[in-house]
Picture 1 (cartoon, rainbow, N blue to C red):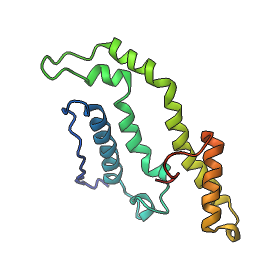
Picture 2: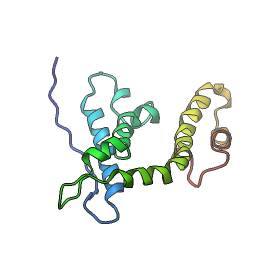
Picture 3: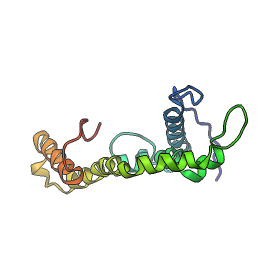
Picture 4: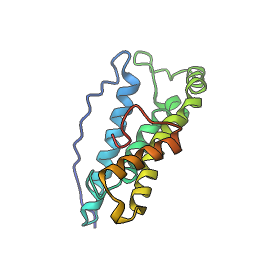
Length: 158
């Protein structure tokens, strides 16, 4: 059964702002992914339509991160990143240069994101009698060190 829906989302993104266009566009696409996800929930369970437990971070961020990843995709940029005055596409050598200078470091962000899922897994595998605030904090630190090679500047679940 088709159930029409309306979705509203907001972002302070201003893709035309000099110096913040890429970040703004990425944020806008990310929030659009959340909007698309929540606008298409057809399950009666609240598990599928909320951003707090028991919904996992991995599940809640799936569609939003897919859409925000398009902003960094070379093919997507070559097609949609256009000069506002001339409508010319961004030169591919500019895209190529950015990829070459940033791609080697992308693994750091990926490892930080993976740490959350590994932490959730370890937490669910923990015997119930061991679940304490102290053990949860200790486990988060252990996972960060194991996956990322050290502690992040921000808490694992922030």
